[in-house]
Length: 71
Image (tube, rainbow, N blue to C red; front, side, top):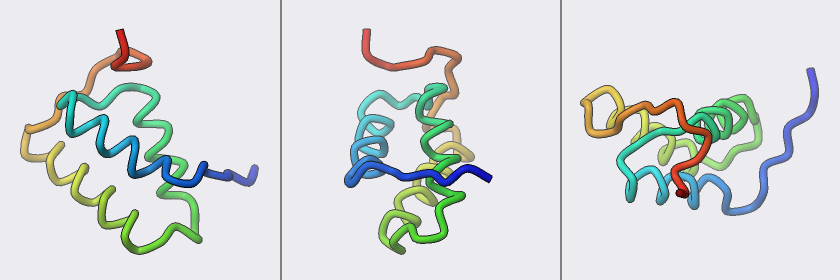
């Protein structure tokens, strides 16, 4: 399995973008997948991911097929 190295602060930026746009893009999904598979992810960032997933389940975030939310 290839080693995934996340950029420092990437999760925080991604969660902020998701909260601002209320949508989960393809890039966000891949980023979240990589973060979840990272065994060394700090607990604070795991909690941020959990908040995103709960918001998704509650319908507060839409899943879109766009690569990025930046127009």
